[in-house]
Image (cartoon, rainbow, N blue to C red; front, side):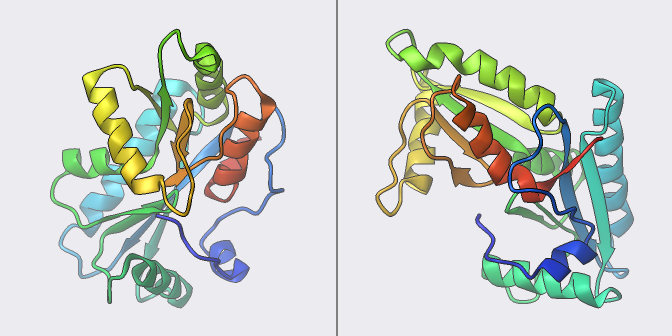
Length: 224
């Protein structure tokens, strides 16, 4: 989902760092994950613990900060409440339920159990790279882009979608149905991140990484 323009004061109050439009070359960045809870939520503490455990597990696994958890209690924090109301309006939900996780322009609403909750959060953090076989000359460079993304955004989950497999073909069709709107066509290789189909760029071209940087700039902070 694509979030509308947000007043800078709201994001600043929520702990989002503002950086240049394209992050600096060579830096690695952690993905911001917002969690909204109410003190009356039956699973508020469960949700907090699950998110913090996920962030800690990533850091242990990769040896660096991968996720930044920003936990906000509403309606105690009026600025956080205003942000939650805006997210609800974008999602078409009046008085959105909590716990609610928001990251990379997408949301997880509610909490059933830790395993499901964590899997849903990982879904928000997933970038999909759709590619083909030997007939796709540019696709041979997909591993280079995967390596660059994994280094710069260690909290990003990178999923390669091979359109020549049955599973990959089905997923590609689902992505086309969702994102081929307003004349935008999916060219292979194709990149989907933060609920957005990026413009075409060969994976070995600097523009490909630049497109990811521009899309993720408001949803990540530098680890420097």
